[in-house]
Amino acid sequence: MSKFNAKQLLWIDFETDGLDPSTLNILEVSLILTDSDLNVIDELKNLNVYKDQEVLSQLNEWCLTIHTANGVLERCRSSTLSLDDVKNKIVDFLNKHQINNTAYLAGSGVHYDLNILRHTWPSIASRFPYRILDTSSFLIAAGFWSEALVCENKKVQKGNHSSYGDLQASLAYMRNYKKFCFDQPLSLGGTVIIGD
Image 1 (tube, rainbow, N blue to C red):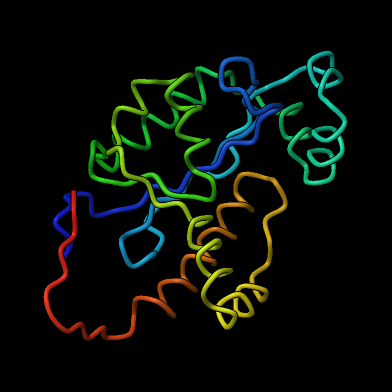
Image 2 (cartoon, helix red, strand yellow):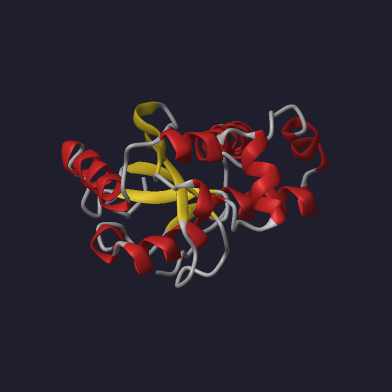
């Protein structure tokens, strides 16, 4: 059994207009809370920050193309939520589930999402352990060491750069990794020492 105290995973994905947390604008965020067996407990789907047409028209070509096709920009136009409203909804969600160092942040490239939290809402970021579960690390490992798992992952419907769609894909990938890498009994000879 793990020596770590967190027993849940909070899957998080931001959609933004850039990559630098100090200058980007948050467009959308979704959260999915799961237990350690990846069963969904609760979710916050597509929290979009209101943006007027003037702001949206200044987005770069990639953002305009992708986020028009996946509906993110339209959801931002029709949203009634400010950035503070989105923060409050996230805090309410965390309070509802008593999340305070009891869940690891998880997702694909989730270090990026953690950096956004640290810059934009440090009080939310502080509610999580420093360890994260990043599905992209498993994706890299599978590419190196398991052609069979790479083939299995090709069956997963990829995310469409909307926050909820990307989380669904991340969870599907992680369920594959769990099934093929961890659900089988593991027999080890000798002593295994795991560092902190």
